[in-house]
Image (cartoon, rainbow, N blue to C red; front, side):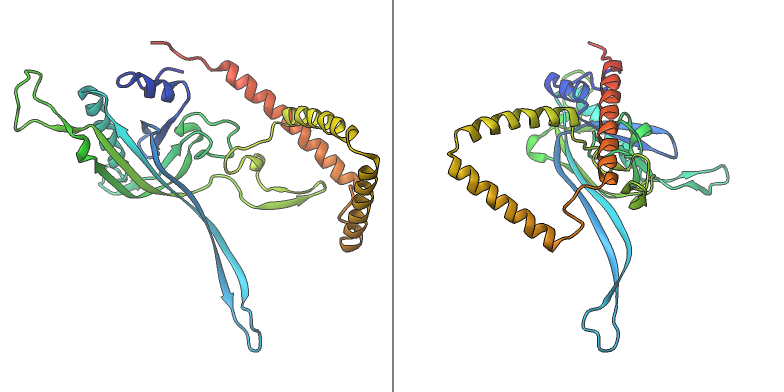
Length: 304
């Protein structure tokens, strides 16, 4: 994968290029995209469930009818220039992002496409129906940008484009050394949400639903290794505990288990279906880990 950021501060370039620490915005109507280094100042992912209460005579509590759960992301980041050239590139990218807020029109001057965008920022903003995140075009989260704000940091100063002759040019452009960009993003998911029941129990409706929303998985192999190490440590600690304390602990455990079984019959036990579901989950985790390792091995970086 070619380096996206070449000019400017080498440290932030390396963070963005090698660590994929950048925000990628793709404009669906035109197929154009723009990238910014992920110097985040704000990130808030809000989920809002809407209910409609219906009251009835003699009933104190309203009957709650579920309508929907919406998702909105608030994002803010600094755009910092290391040089006049980078400041010019930053202003050009910001201008492109502003242009993405407008729709596309056909030959008859009729609006043909709404200005929907896709945003990709690692696993915080990506289409969970994809196995791995890559570019905004391929795996970005679809939605609508609203509430865009362009806020130059006047205390940081500006670069004056004097035409290269070193003389002040009152009619020349000025470019921000530091700018804060912020906007709201109303998410439109491209996969089914919610739960469905199968012979193995409850699970996500979509095939890759377990990746929603942040592609977070526990590495089962690593967890198993940690558990083995913890078990050995626990065994060593138990050997140092007096027998009276061990007996008392066992008695307390048996009492607690008996209480749990009496209070929650049919819950505190492992059924064949549950064991089968756990085995399936473990196998899936192993396959995901293998796919990730293969994907990582296939990546290559152009060194400049």
